[in-house]
Image (cartoon, rainbow, N blue to C red; front, side, top):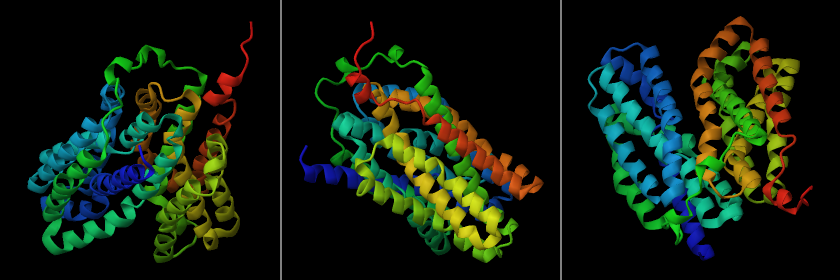
Length: 391
């Protein structure tokens, strides 16, 4: 594939990720309150449907990954746009809680089909062990999902209502994203299904367990911070308006560090950048505890930088350690526990924050140190091949 074609594929995948995250992961952050108000539902129920949508991929992602490994990811990615559109249309016509929950469950299925693991797997199919840079580029562009999605959803909802916003995103999926994926996404390389990996070879060895623990802790901390960072900073003495502004630095830091990963840091081993990423949140936490609310920005920047690098690492480390064979299925197994913890994170952290802000921050920082420990003893596949056999 020519460099120009590769750039087009990466750009198309990145734009698709912006739309996918905006109309799923970030949707209720803008529409949740008006939906609850119009349908007469408790806020807890409406936002509980977000947890439902996050749990669906935990059950279906291994099946989706098998499909990707067997026949390539293009049919899966194209189908995701139709599923997203269906879920959004169901939301748009919802008159009571059961239909709302159904719509969010369908959107959750769309997330299993179309969020970052699918384009990452397609890139691995296309470029093998050279997929790190295009994966980083897609993560960089897709990281704008909240930056673009929140204000755009808010503007459309203010103009034509929350139902109109749901239908507008459904139209984007069908009229923009689907043709873009169908046109830009290459088919699986020749040979396809006959080269399908034997998934029995994907075993729970020590490195896989380490990666699973690492990313489960990372996604738990990430959702805790996404849900509670402004409240956490306020608990350390920042005015709420300043805390909210500081929390916005998370996205800035995440996108910035992904750009650095794409340019300056791309020649460093993926394991080294992952190790550094695990320490970013604890360093910000130390600054916040030591200096109080005046260091709120330090925690936000540390969380954003660490999470930005870890998002790339989630796509790159399984490839680096095991190579491209069975990549999608292995990645799905590694990410499955993270989805369950991700759904529980906001509730657990809310209890911890009510008990003690310092204790809540100590919990997330301790998990980051567990993540740091999990980066040791992992040997990249290239180094394993170079290592002489021991009789």
